[in-house]
Length: 356
Image 1 (cartoon, rainbow, N blue to C red):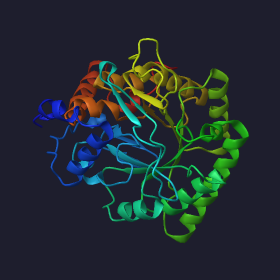
Image 2: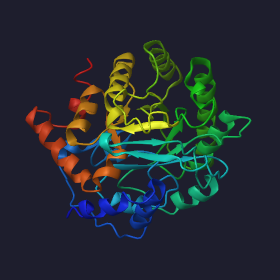
Image 3: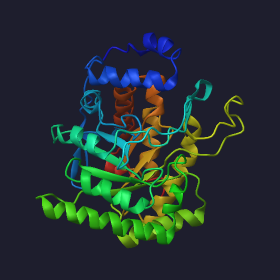
């Protein structure tokens, strides 16, 4: 794959961030981004939730919110693609400007607020995609003005269970008021009862396997809160946990121009905290719940660190903004070489070795 991005980025960085992202989605949707040379190494293959992954590297929710560019993203060599976050009704999100580049830290701050086309539109797009090969996930959440967030999440599951390979309940975005409260003990139990019932209803209508249900959590949790999430996840049968969403914390060395901007911080400054959360969850669950590591992944070494901390799969997003699509095969080659260097025949053999 020829890395054209060093020539494109100087132009894109002059464009307002959200507009630049829309241009990238359009280019992927129209097939204007060249496909990657595949990195097909047996050591990168894995199976999670009965799904086959050619490699463990996926794109996180938020990159392709409305499932407009899934085919283009698949051509980049990703192991899986997660769309969303999708709410029952379309919503515009928060007022602009709402995305900020922190180039020195290779970071972003966003307060988008679940802007998306709504379940009906996105479900139609997902239903039209060919199944098989690279797994597709959908991330769902409640509308901002919803009187019943649990019902909104259940509606997302009910609508999309037959369209995707796995589903994620987003209870950790910092940009929807009150959302993070759904991570806590009894609220999480009630949420999981609602979404499991919705999944069962969807499976009863069609000859489906039970679509895996995952939860995406915040990095801004103390040890007690993380232990409670792990305990409840084991109790109610959560199929997987994504660690983590963006953070509302602001490191002292963050670009002072943006330190007071509201929203979630992603990219390099999130790596250490999100990896610590991942490791804590792996230990608390005894490695029995598959984890997806996300937050600050910008290289094959970063992906490998997430895997060693406990991740069965890894996602990236912000690094794609700064490094472009050639990052994907570059990460995969490095990950393959690191596994070989350390004597691991597969990704699964390396999962959690630093957290045991």
